[in-house]
Image 1 (spheres, rainbow, N blue to C red):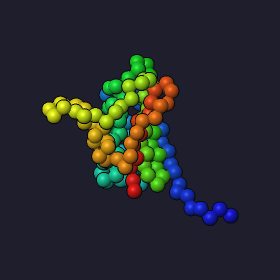
Image 2: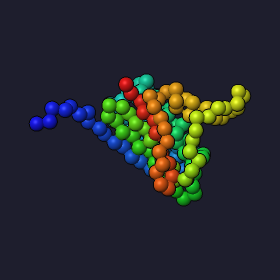
Image 3: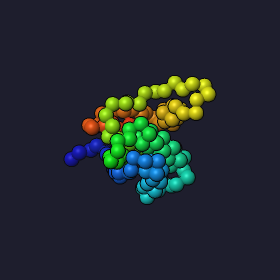
Image 4: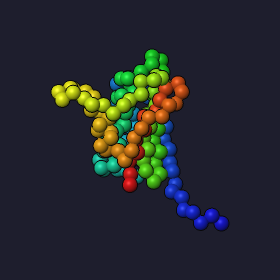
Length: 136
């Protein structure tokens, strides 16, 4: 008999259009799914996940947009919450930005870095997946 205790993992995957409206929809879908999994809307975890999904989805539609191709949101809840947003544009890997002091953009991944336990980028032909993890 296997004496290891495993944590159940649940997964949610949805495609969203590579538009601003699609990015907004991804955030709403994430909050709704987390609520269905018992992470209440308005809780710290839900609010943090919403911010991260909003930023990753906005970056995907702004920098990873390929006409006619959708983006993908993937949530995996186990011992940590893993958030993944995939676009289909090859290259253009996001890097930790150093925005100008008065710049109106360029701080999103700094926010993700500050809120997430870890984050990164993985190649996923034909594009890439940007991920972040929340949890202990």
